[in-house]
Amino acid sequence: MSNPLPIIPGRLPSAPDKYDRDNEAMTRRIIELALARGPTAGGGGGLHVREDFTVTTAVLDPCEGENGEIDLGGSSGECIIVISDGPARVRVYATAAGRTADQDRPTWREPDAGIGVLLDVLLEESGGQTFLLQPASYVYNADSTVADLIYYRITNYADAAAARQITLTIIVIEE
Image (cartoon, rainbow, N blue to C red):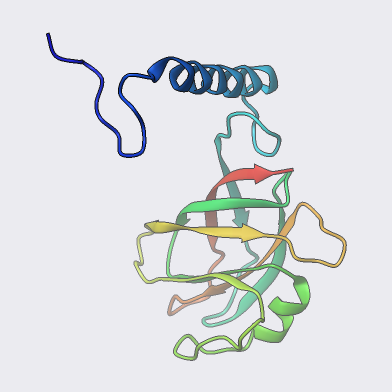
């Protein structure tokens, strides 16, 4: 009868007991810790869930932008989806100062190094658009005193004045 254990380089197939017990104990401990913390609605440890953060701007003229901030309930996360109800440019920053320094940058120009641009998406569909970020964009707060905020600038890219509704789907991963 052949040995049912796979042969792994650097490991003797005849000595699986301690190796398997250690891995099983470690896996069990990780699961216990995750279950003890429980699922959270953003922030916190344990299992993380998607949260939608929706912002509606004031009525903006074409190419006019609005600054703001989003309270994540945690200081970092993974942005996986950006949804707009019409043509818009959506930028997310690590600091308010970085946003202010970058707010007049045209779409065709690269941001200055170290300015803290975390996300810059141009959504051009007039009827609205859902943009799946692949890979996800890591967003975080880099203020001198870390806060639960990320900073944004939303620019109306329609041919007429309009309010823009933007939704960012973020998996908050750090309290």
